[in-house]
Length: 142
Image (cartoon, rainbow, N blue to C red; front, side, top):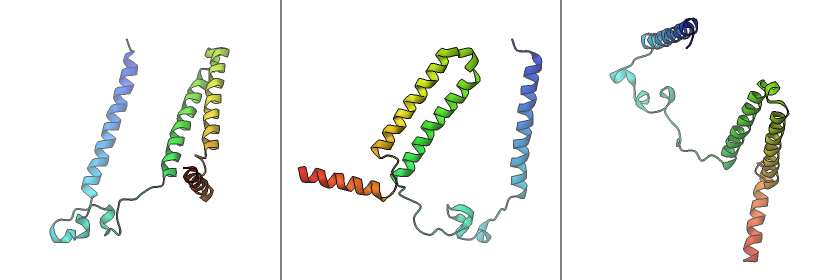
């Protein structure tokens, strides 16, 4: 069973956070700009930021490199999180924990080398030229 002092501090923290949230929402309601009717204007009713009249389409086609960078970030960010948590218990895990961390790091290093070798990290025009050349070569063999 938890000590009362631990529950008291968590409860106090929750109350303070609740008061902070309520004050922020209340102040934004009081000081916020409210326009109704004709004073609102045509641009304020459009679904765009700050009432600015939109130019062009909101549908953008992002290049595949954007998603690759996002996936690589998530993968290697998780690696960092796992290794940092391992570092906090390194003395308790001993040599077995150290070997597991080394195997984990080597595995991720091999996967990074594979991605590098496969050209997943090439974002310049050379990567596109290599892809185009491979397509032309496949068409010649067909």
